[in-house]
Image 1: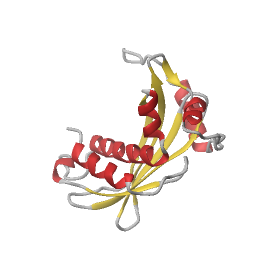
Image 2: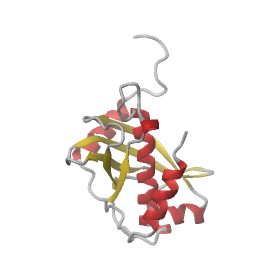
Image 3: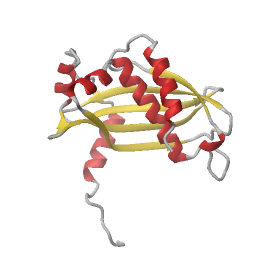
Image 4: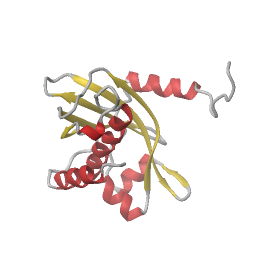
Length: 180
């Protein structure tokens, strides 16, 4: 089940924080609850991605994107992701989530998020390719920026993200439905 109570709490907290520039980092505090655990008594990998939703919603609120999505009747979707898990987060452990928009191109917005334990060790990191959509399909980031009253040019795409974009372009779609 989606953590709607957590979402409400995080959105209330984010609404009380100062606005962020497009590529600034939103930092939020969280705890691993028993219903977040997998069979090994650590934060479930699927739940991790669900909790990352909370950070993206908050950063959208603080940058002004959320209000533009509402006023334009646009949606936002995830068009791809790549996650790394490196450190366990266990029951009742506190962690910090960091969420930010890194760059964008003609179609997509690239976001990165990470979870850090109380010892300052990165537990997981995820890169998302997201798209703003309307009833006709993808809304270009330039159009979104204009609606936000922004004139920012896209930051240079970091090499590791450019490499991921290139690798994703080589991935067959639709996927093969038979063994190779």
